[in-house]
Amino acid sequence: MKKVDPRPSRAIVAAVQLASVSDAEFEASLIELRQLGKTLGFEVAGRFTQKRARVDAAAYFGAGKREELRLMREQEGAAVVLVDHEISPSQSHNLEKAVGCEVMDRTMVILEIFHRHARSRYARAQVEIARLGYMAPRLREAAKLAGPKDRGRSGTGGRSGGESHGELDRRKIRDRIVELQKELDGMALERKTQRARRHEREGLARVALVGYTNAGKSTLMRALTGSEGLVADQLFATLDTTVRALHPEPVPRVLVSDTVGFIKNLPHGLVTSFKSTLDEALEASLLAHVVDASDPAHERQLAVTEKALDEIGAAGVPRLLVFNKIDRGGDEAALREKYPGCIVMSARRPQDVAKLREAILAFFQKRLVEAELFLPWSAQKLRGQIFATCAVLEERPDGGGTFLRVRGEPEVVKRLRAQFGKVALHPRN
Ligand SMILES: Nc1nc2c(ncn2[C@@H]2O[C@H](COP(=O)(O)OP(=O)(O)OP(=O)(O)O)[C@@H](O)[C@H]2O)c(=O)[nH]1
Ligand SMILES: [Mg+2]
Image 1 (cartoon, helix red, strand yellow):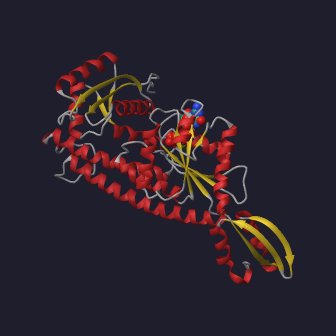
Image 2: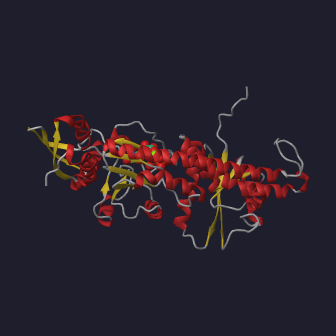
Image 3: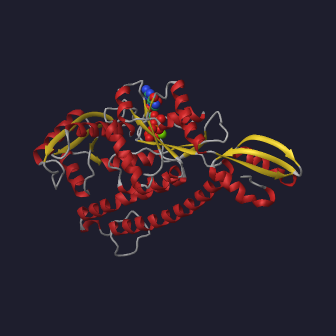
Protein backbone atom coordinates (compact mmCIF):
# COMPACT_ATOMS: atom_id res chain seq x y z
CA MET A 1 0.00 0.00 0.00
CA LYS A 2 1.23 3.47 -0.81
CA LYS A 3 2.35 5.36 2.24
CA VAL A 4 0.75 8.76 2.56
CA ASP A 5 3.05 11.53 3.73
CA PRO A 6 1.25 13.09 6.71
CA ARG A 7 3.13 16.37 6.35
CA PRO A 8 1.35 18.98 4.24
CA SER A 9 3.15 20.15 1.11
CA ARG A 10 4.81 23.50 1.46
CA ALA A 11 3.84 26.37 -0.78
CA ILE A 12 5.04 29.90 -1.49
CA VAL A 13 2.56 32.63 -2.31
CA ALA A 14 3.89 34.97 -4.95
CA ALA A 15 2.59 38.07 -6.65
CA VAL A 16 3.46 41.04 -8.81
CA GLN A 17 2.12 44.31 -7.39
CA LEU A 18 0.93 46.44 -10.27
CA ALA A 19 1.09 50.22 -10.04
CA SER A 20 -2.73 50.45 -10.01
CA VAL A 21 -3.01 48.31 -6.86
CA SER A 22 -2.75 49.95 -3.43
CA ASP A 23 -0.64 48.39 -0.70
CA ALA A 24 -3.69 47.56 1.40
CA GLU A 25 -5.46 45.91 -1.47
CA PHE A 26 -2.36 43.95 -2.40
CA GLU A 27 -1.88 42.73 1.18
CA ALA A 28 -5.49 41.67 1.54
CA SER A 29 -5.32 39.73 -1.68
CA LEU A 30 -2.15 37.91 -0.63
CA ILE A 31 -3.64 37.02 2.74
CA GLU A 32 -6.61 35.64 0.89
CA LEU A 33 -4.39 33.59 -1.42
CA ARG A 34 -2.66 32.22 1.64
CA GLN A 35 -6.04 31.14 3.02
CA LEU A 36 -6.97 29.62 -0.30
CA GLY A 37 -3.70 27.68 -0.19
CA LYS A 38 -4.42 26.48 3.34
CA THR A 39 -7.87 25.39 2.29
CA LEU A 40 -6.15 23.18 -0.29
CA GLY A 41 -4.03 21.69 2.49
CA PHE A 42 -0.76 23.53 1.80
CA GLU A 43 1.47 24.84 4.52
CA VAL A 44 2.36 28.31 3.33
CA ALA A 45 6.11 28.65 3.89
CA GLY A 46 6.78 32.07 2.46
CA ARG A 47 5.71 35.01 0.35
CA PHE A 48 7.45 36.53 -2.61
CA THR A 49 6.53 39.83 -4.25
CA GLN A 50 7.72 42.24 -6.89
CA LYS A 51 6.54 45.73 -7.90
CA ARG A 52 6.19 46.11 -11.63
CA ALA A 53 4.32 48.33 -14.07
CA ARG A 54 3.02 45.18 -15.77
CA VAL A 55 3.61 41.49 -15.37
CA ASP A 56 6.41 39.92 -17.41
CA ALA A 57 4.86 38.73 -20.67
CA ALA A 58 7.00 35.61 -20.85
CA ALA A 59 7.10 34.31 -17.30
CA TYR A 60 5.10 36.64 -15.00
CA PHE A 61 8.18 37.69 -12.92
CA GLY A 62 11.26 39.30 -14.46
CA ALA A 63 14.34 37.15 -15.06
CA GLY A 64 16.29 38.22 -11.94
CA LYS A 65 13.27 37.74 -9.71
CA ARG A 66 12.62 34.31 -11.14
CA GLU A 67 16.07 33.27 -10.00
CA GLU A 68 15.44 34.70 -6.51
CA LEU A 69 12.17 32.81 -6.34
CA ARG A 70 13.93 29.60 -7.35
CA LEU A 71 16.41 30.01 -4.49
CA MET A 72 13.69 30.80 -2.01
CA ARG A 73 11.60 27.83 -2.94
CA GLU A 74 14.62 25.53 -2.70
CA GLN A 75 15.51 26.87 0.72
CA GLU A 76 11.96 26.46 1.95
CA GLY A 77 11.55 23.06 0.37
CA ALA A 78 8.35 24.25 -1.27
CA ALA A 79 6.63 21.96 -3.75
CA VAL A 80 4.43 24.57 -5.32
CA VAL A 81 4.28 28.30 -6.03
CA LEU A 82 0.85 29.95 -5.85
CA VAL A 83 0.56 33.02 -8.05
CA ASP A 84 -1.99 35.71 -7.20
CA HIS A 85 -3.09 36.40 -10.79
CA GLU A 86 -4.60 34.41 -13.57
CA ILE A 87 -1.60 33.77 -15.84
CA SER A 88 -1.40 32.40 -19.37
CA PRO A 89 -0.46 28.80 -20.10
CA SER A 90 2.92 29.85 -21.50
CA GLN A 91 3.69 32.15 -18.56
CA SER A 92 2.89 29.33 -16.23
CA HIS A 93 5.03 26.88 -18.19
CA ASN A 94 8.02 29.24 -18.32
CA LEU A 95 7.76 30.10 -14.66
CA GLU A 96 7.65 26.42 -13.74
CA LYS A 97 10.82 25.84 -15.73
CA ALA A 98 12.56 28.78 -14.06
CA VAL A 99 11.66 27.93 -10.46
CA GLY A 100 11.73 24.18 -10.81
CA CYS A 101 8.37 23.30 -9.30
CA GLU A 102 4.67 23.34 -10.01
CA VAL A 103 2.99 26.73 -10.38
CA MET A 104 -0.71 27.22 -9.67
CA ASP A 105 -2.40 30.48 -10.51
CA ARG A 106 -5.28 31.96 -8.47
CA THR A 107 -7.86 30.61 -10.88
CA MET A 108 -6.50 27.09 -10.69
CA VAL A 109 -6.40 27.24 -6.89
CA ILE A 110 -10.04 28.30 -6.70
CA LEU A 111 -11.09 25.72 -9.29
CA GLU A 112 -9.30 23.02 -7.32
CA ILE A 113 -11.10 24.02 -4.11
CA PHE A 114 -14.43 23.98 -5.87
CA HIS A 115 -13.56 20.60 -7.32
CA ARG A 116 -12.79 19.15 -3.92
CA HIS A 117 -15.77 20.67 -2.17
CA ALA A 118 -18.44 19.95 -4.77
CA ARG A 119 -20.86 17.39 -3.36
CA SER A 120 -24.06 17.30 -5.37
CA ARG A 121 -24.21 16.00 -8.92
CA TYR A 122 -25.20 19.48 -10.01
CA ALA A 123 -22.23 21.23 -8.39
CA ARG A 124 -19.84 18.57 -9.65
CA ALA A 125 -20.97 18.99 -13.22
CA GLN A 126 -20.71 22.78 -12.99
CA VAL A 127 -17.21 22.66 -11.61
CA GLU A 128 -16.08 20.08 -14.14
CA ILE A 129 -17.20 22.32 -17.00
CA ALA A 130 -15.25 25.22 -15.52
CA ARG A 131 -12.16 23.08 -15.07
CA LEU A 132 -12.31 21.72 -18.59
CA GLY A 133 -12.66 25.27 -19.91
CA TYR A 134 -9.55 26.24 -17.97
CA MET A 135 -7.59 23.19 -19.07
CA ALA A 136 -8.36 23.32 -22.80
CA PRO A 137 -6.01 26.18 -23.74
CA ARG A 138 -3.36 24.79 -21.42
CA LEU A 139 -3.39 21.45 -23.13
CA ARG A 140 -3.02 23.22 -26.45
CA GLU A 141 0.00 25.01 -25.05
CA ALA A 142 1.47 21.82 -23.67
CA ALA A 143 1.02 20.12 -27.04
CA LYS A 144 2.69 23.03 -28.81
CA LEU A 145 5.63 22.93 -26.44
CA ALA A 146 5.94 19.18 -26.76
CA GLY A 147 6.24 19.76 -30.50
CA PRO A 148 5.90 17.24 -33.34
CA LYS A 149 7.61 14.54 -31.28
CA ASP A 150 4.34 14.16 -29.43
CA ARG A 151 2.47 13.14 -32.55
CA GLY A 152 1.66 9.49 -32.62
CA ARG A 153 2.63 8.88 -29.02
CA SER A 154 0.34 6.25 -27.64
CA GLY A 155 -1.41 6.06 -24.32
CA THR A 156 -4.87 7.50 -24.61
CA GLY A 157 -6.37 4.77 -26.75
CA GLY A 158 -9.22 4.99 -29.25
CA ARG A 159 -7.44 7.69 -31.20
CA SER A 160 -8.05 7.79 -34.93
CA GLY A 161 -4.97 7.80 -37.14
CA GLY A 162 -3.16 11.06 -37.84
CA GLU A 163 -4.68 12.94 -34.93
CA SER A 164 -2.20 14.40 -32.48
CA HIS A 165 -2.40 13.83 -28.78
CA GLY A 166 -3.39 17.42 -28.14
CA GLU A 167 -6.10 17.45 -30.82
CA LEU A 168 -7.57 14.31 -29.41
CA ASP A 169 -7.64 15.70 -25.91
CA ARG A 170 -9.26 18.89 -27.12
CA ARG A 171 -11.93 16.98 -29.00
CA LYS A 172 -12.60 14.87 -25.94
CA ILE A 173 -12.87 17.98 -23.79
CA ARG A 174 -15.34 19.57 -26.20
CA ASP A 175 -17.48 16.43 -26.25
CA ARG A 176 -17.39 16.14 -22.51
CA ILE A 177 -18.45 19.76 -22.06
CA VAL A 178 -21.41 19.25 -24.40
CA GLU A 179 -22.37 16.10 -22.52
CA LEU A 180 -22.13 17.78 -19.13
CA GLN A 181 -24.09 20.77 -20.32
CA LYS A 182 -26.92 18.49 -21.42
CA GLU A 183 -26.91 16.81 -18.05
CA LEU A 184 -27.01 20.19 -16.33
CA ASP A 185 -29.89 21.43 -18.45
CA GLY A 186 -31.87 18.36 -17.43
CA MET A 187 -31.04 18.86 -13.78
CA ALA A 188 -31.89 22.56 -13.96
CA LEU A 189 -35.36 21.71 -15.21
CA GLU A 190 -35.81 19.18 -12.44
CA ARG A 191 -34.73 21.72 -9.83
CA LYS A 192 -37.15 24.27 -11.18
CA THR A 193 -40.05 21.85 -10.85
CA GLN A 194 -38.97 20.95 -7.34
CA ARG A 195 -38.79 24.60 -6.40
CA ALA A 196 -42.26 25.28 -7.73
CA ARG A 197 -43.62 22.35 -5.73
CA ARG A 198 -41.89 23.51 -2.61
CA HIS A 199 -43.39 26.96 -2.99
CA GLU A 200 -46.79 25.44 -3.14
CA ARG A 201 -46.24 23.33 -0.08
CA GLU A 202 -44.32 25.71 2.07
CA GLY A 203 -45.27 29.20 1.11
CA LEU A 204 -43.07 31.89 -0.25
CA ALA A 205 -41.41 33.66 2.65
CA ARG A 206 -37.77 33.10 1.91
CA VAL A 207 -34.58 34.74 3.11
CA ALA A 208 -31.22 33.92 1.52
CA LEU A 209 -27.92 34.25 3.35
CA VAL A 210 -25.41 35.66 0.89
CA GLY A 211 -21.93 37.09 1.29
CA TYR A 212 -18.20 36.75 0.89
CA THR A 213 -16.69 33.34 1.50
CA ASN A 214 -16.04 32.52 5.19
CA ALA A 215 -18.27 35.35 6.46
CA GLY A 216 -20.28 32.93 8.60
CA LYS A 217 -23.32 32.18 6.43
CA SER A 218 -23.49 28.47 7.24
CA THR A 219 -22.95 29.17 10.94
CA LEU A 220 -25.91 31.55 10.91
CA MET A 221 -27.93 29.06 8.89
CA ARG A 222 -27.35 26.48 11.61
CA ALA A 223 -28.16 28.90 14.38
CA LEU A 224 -31.35 30.10 12.70
CA THR A 225 -32.69 26.71 11.61
CA GLY A 226 -31.21 24.26 14.08
CA SER A 227 -29.77 22.28 11.16
CA GLU A 228 -26.39 20.64 10.82
CA GLY A 229 -24.92 22.26 7.72
CA LEU A 230 -21.18 22.21 7.11
CA VAL A 231 -19.29 24.96 8.89
CA ALA A 232 -15.56 25.18 8.36
CA ASP A 233 -12.80 27.72 8.60
CA GLN A 234 -12.13 27.27 4.94
CA LEU A 235 -12.90 29.18 1.83
CA PHE A 236 -15.82 27.81 -0.15
CA ALA A 237 -16.92 25.24 2.38
CA THR A 238 -20.42 25.51 0.94
CA LEU A 239 -21.02 25.06 -2.77
CA ASP A 240 -24.66 24.11 -2.91
CA THR A 241 -27.63 26.12 -1.92
CA THR A 242 -29.46 24.46 0.96
CA VAL A 243 -32.90 25.41 2.22
CA ARG A 244 -34.32 24.89 5.72
CA ALA A 245 -37.17 26.33 7.73
CA LEU A 246 -36.53 28.95 10.37
CA HIS A 247 -36.71 27.15 13.71
CA PRO A 248 -38.67 27.39 16.01
CA GLU A 249 -41.19 27.81 13.25
CA PRO A 250 -43.17 31.00 13.00
CA VAL A 251 -46.53 30.89 11.22
CA PRO A 252 -46.44 31.27 8.33
CA ARG A 253 -43.10 29.57 7.94
CA VAL A 254 -39.98 31.32 6.77
CA LEU A 255 -37.42 29.44 4.71
CA VAL A 256 -33.73 30.22 4.97
CA SER A 257 -31.24 29.36 2.22
CA ASP A 258 -27.49 29.12 2.58
CA THR A 259 -25.50 29.88 -0.53
CA VAL A 260 -22.03 29.69 -2.05
CA GLY A 261 -19.71 32.53 -1.05
CA PHE A 262 -18.24 35.17 -3.30
CA ILE A 263 -14.60 36.04 -3.82
CA LYS A 264 -12.72 38.63 -5.81
CA ASN A 265 -11.58 37.57 -9.28
CA LEU A 266 -13.83 34.59 -9.48
CA PRO A 267 -12.76 32.42 -12.42
CA HIS A 268 -14.93 33.04 -15.46
CA GLY A 269 -16.11 29.49 -15.80
CA LEU A 270 -17.37 29.56 -12.25
CA VAL A 271 -19.40 32.71 -12.67
CA THR A 272 -21.96 30.72 -14.63
CA SER A 273 -22.16 28.04 -12.00
CA PHE A 274 -22.61 30.67 -9.35
CA LYS A 275 -25.49 32.09 -11.30
CA SER A 276 -27.40 28.85 -11.44
CA THR A 277 -26.59 27.89 -7.87
CA LEU A 278 -27.76 31.29 -6.79
CA ASP A 279 -30.97 31.16 -8.80
CA GLU A 280 -32.66 29.77 -5.80
CA ALA A 281 -31.41 32.59 -3.64
CA LEU A 282 -32.68 35.07 -6.18
CA GLU A 283 -36.19 33.89 -5.55
CA ALA A 284 -35.85 35.05 -1.98
CA SER A 285 -37.82 38.10 -0.89
CA LEU A 286 -34.97 39.16 1.35
CA LEU A 287 -31.20 38.85 1.14
CA ALA A 288 -29.31 38.81 4.41
CA HIS A 289 -25.89 39.99 3.29
CA VAL A 290 -23.44 38.56 5.82
CA VAL A 291 -20.13 40.41 6.25
CA ASP A 292 -17.18 39.41 8.47
CA ALA A 293 -16.87 42.60 10.54
CA SER A 294 -13.60 41.39 12.07
CA ASP A 295 -11.81 41.14 8.72
CA PRO A 296 -9.81 44.29 7.94
CA ALA A 297 -10.75 43.78 4.28
CA HIS A 298 -14.51 43.65 4.99
CA GLU A 299 -15.33 46.81 3.04
CA ARG A 300 -13.78 45.43 -0.11
CA GLN A 301 -15.49 42.11 0.47
CA LEU A 302 -18.80 43.87 0.88
CA ALA A 303 -18.26 45.73 -2.39
CA VAL A 304 -17.29 42.56 -4.29
CA THR A 305 -20.43 40.84 -3.04
CA GLU A 306 -22.71 43.76 -3.93
CA LYS A 307 -21.23 43.91 -7.41
CA ALA A 308 -21.68 40.17 -7.91
CA LEU A 309 -25.28 40.41 -6.70
CA ASP A 310 -25.92 43.17 -9.22
CA GLU A 311 -24.44 41.04 -11.96
CA ILE A 312 -26.71 38.12 -11.26
CA GLY A 313 -29.74 40.39 -11.28
CA ALA A 314 -30.37 40.66 -7.55
CA ALA A 315 -29.92 44.41 -7.29
CA GLY A 316 -33.60 45.00 -6.57
CA VAL A 317 -34.04 42.41 -3.81
CA PRO A 318 -34.36 44.02 -0.35
CA ARG A 319 -31.26 43.69 1.81
CA LEU A 320 -30.52 43.21 5.45
CA LEU A 321 -26.88 43.99 6.07
CA VAL A 322 -25.49 41.69 8.78
CA PHE A 323 -22.05 42.38 10.25
CA ASN A 324 -21.03 39.11 11.86
CA LYS A 325 -18.06 38.00 14.04
CA ILE A 326 -18.07 41.21 16.06
CA ASP A 327 -16.78 39.11 18.99
CA ARG A 328 -13.49 38.80 17.08
CA GLY A 329 -13.12 42.46 16.31
CA GLY A 330 -14.54 45.37 14.36
CA ASP A 331 -15.86 48.78 15.32
CA GLU A 332 -19.54 48.40 16.12
CA ALA A 333 -20.30 52.12 16.51
CA ALA A 334 -18.61 53.02 13.24
CA LEU A 335 -20.48 50.30 11.37
CA ARG A 336 -23.83 51.44 12.76
CA GLU A 337 -23.12 54.99 11.73
CA LYS A 338 -21.92 54.13 8.26
CA TYR A 339 -24.63 51.57 7.50
CA PRO A 340 -27.89 52.69 9.13
CA GLY A 341 -30.27 49.83 9.76
CA CYS A 342 -27.54 47.20 9.74
CA ILE A 343 -27.28 44.40 12.28
CA VAL A 344 -24.01 44.01 14.14
CA MET A 345 -23.70 40.63 15.81
CA SER A 346 -21.85 37.45 16.63
CA ALA A 347 -23.16 34.08 15.56
CA ARG A 348 -21.65 32.81 18.79
CA ARG A 349 -24.11 34.76 20.96
CA PRO A 350 -27.61 33.30 21.12
CA GLN A 351 -29.13 36.67 22.01
CA ASP A 352 -27.65 38.16 18.83
CA VAL A 353 -29.00 35.33 16.73
CA ALA A 354 -32.40 35.99 18.30
CA LYS A 355 -32.13 39.63 17.23
CA LEU A 356 -31.37 38.60 13.67
CA ARG A 357 -34.33 36.26 13.75
CA GLU A 358 -36.58 39.11 14.92
CA ALA A 359 -35.34 41.38 12.15
CA ILE A 360 -36.07 38.71 9.55
CA LEU A 361 -39.51 38.01 11.00
CA ALA A 362 -40.32 41.71 11.15
CA PHE A 363 -39.58 42.00 7.45
CA PHE A 364 -41.95 39.19 6.58
CA GLN A 365 -44.67 40.22 9.05
CA LYS A 366 -44.92 43.59 7.36
CA ARG A 367 -45.75 41.96 4.06
CA LEU A 368 -48.51 39.72 5.32
CA VAL A 369 -52.13 40.31 4.36
CA GLU A 370 -55.30 39.15 6.03
CA ALA A 371 -58.15 37.45 4.25
CA GLU A 372 -61.30 35.53 5.04
CA LEU A 373 -61.85 32.23 3.38
CA PHE A 374 -64.82 29.94 3.34
CA LEU A 375 -64.04 26.28 3.32
CA PRO A 376 -67.01 24.00 2.63
CA TRP A 377 -67.18 20.67 4.48
CA SER A 378 -66.55 18.93 1.17
CA ALA A 379 -63.13 20.57 0.90
CA GLN A 380 -61.86 20.04 4.45
CA LYS A 381 -58.85 18.15 3.20
CA LEU A 382 -57.44 21.53 2.18
CA ARG A 383 -57.28 22.64 5.79
CA GLY A 384 -53.80 21.19 6.16
CA GLN A 385 -52.48 23.29 3.34
CA ILE A 386 -54.03 26.46 4.73
CA PHE A 387 -52.65 25.82 8.21
CA ALA A 388 -49.21 25.06 6.78
CA THR A 389 -48.95 28.26 4.79
CA CYS A 390 -50.95 30.82 6.76
CA ALA A 391 -51.56 31.89 10.32
CA VAL A 392 -55.19 31.11 11.13
CA LEU A 393 -56.47 33.95 13.31
CA GLU A 394 -60.04 32.79 13.64
CA GLU A 395 -62.04 29.77 12.72
CA ARG A 396 -65.79 29.31 13.04
CA PRO A 397 -68.31 26.89 11.58
CA ASP A 398 -70.81 28.56 9.31
CA GLY A 399 -73.57 26.77 7.45
CA GLY A 400 -72.03 24.35 5.04
CA GLY A 401 -68.43 24.73 6.16
CA THR A 402 -65.91 26.86 8.06
CA PHE A 403 -64.95 30.47 7.89
CA LEU A 404 -61.29 31.06 8.38
CA ARG A 405 -59.64 34.40 8.96
CA VAL A 406 -56.06 33.98 7.90
CA ARG A 407 -52.89 35.98 7.61
CA GLY A 408 -50.33 35.02 5.01
CA GLU A 409 -47.95 36.04 2.28
CA PRO A 410 -49.83 38.02 -0.39
CA GLU A 411 -48.86 35.50 -3.07
CA VAL A 412 -49.96 32.56 -0.96
CA VAL A 413 -53.34 34.07 -0.20
CA LYS A 414 -53.79 34.94 -3.85
CA ARG A 415 -52.86 31.43 -4.88
CA LEU A 416 -55.21 29.83 -2.40
CA ARG A 417 -57.98 31.89 -3.90
CA ALA A 418 -57.01 31.17 -7.48
CA GLN A 419 -56.41 27.50 -6.88
CA PHE A 420 -59.77 26.66 -5.42
CA GLY A 421 -61.85 29.37 -6.97
CA LYS A 422 -65.20 30.39 -5.65
CA VAL A 423 -66.48 26.86 -5.32
CA ALA A 424 -64.28 25.76 -2.48
CA LEU A 425 -62.94 28.99 -1.09
CA HIS A 426 -64.65 32.31 -0.81
CA PRO A 427 -62.38 35.16 0.07
CA ARG A 428 -64.19 37.99 1.73
CA ASN A 429 -63.12 41.58 1.13
N1 LIG B 1 -15.51 34.26 16.23
C1 LIG B 1 -16.50 33.99 15.40
N2 LIG B 1 -16.35 33.06 14.45
C2 LIG B 1 -17.37 32.82 13.61
C3 LIG B 1 -18.60 33.54 13.70
N3 LIG B 1 -19.42 33.08 12.71
C4 LIG B 1 -18.73 32.14 12.05
N4 LIG B 1 -17.49 31.96 12.58
C5 LIG B 1 -16.45 31.02 12.11
O1 LIG B 1 -16.04 31.43 10.81
C6 LIG B 1 -15.69 30.30 10.01
C7 LIG B 1 -16.48 30.29 8.71
O2 LIG B 1 -17.84 30.08 9.00
P1 LIG B 1 -18.86 29.48 7.92
O3 LIG B 1 -20.21 29.55 8.53
O4 LIG B 1 -18.39 28.17 7.39
O5 LIG B 1 -18.72 30.59 6.78
P2 LIG B 1 -19.45 30.62 5.34
O6 LIG B 1 -19.83 32.05 5.09
O7 LIG B 1 -20.56 29.62 5.29
O8 LIG B 1 -18.24 30.22 4.40
P3 LIG B 1 -18.24 29.52 2.93
O9 LIG B 1 -19.23 28.40 2.94
O10 LIG B 1 -16.85 29.08 2.81
O11 LIG B 1 -18.58 30.60 1.96
C8 LIG B 1 -15.97 29.08 10.89
O12 LIG B 1 -14.76 28.70 11.48
C9 LIG B 1 -16.94 29.60 11.94
O13 LIG B 1 -16.88 28.88 13.15
C10 LIG B 1 -18.74 34.54 14.73
O14 LIG B 1 -19.73 35.23 14.88
N5 LIG B 1 -17.65 34.71 15.53
MG1 LIG C 1 -20.81 28.01 4.09
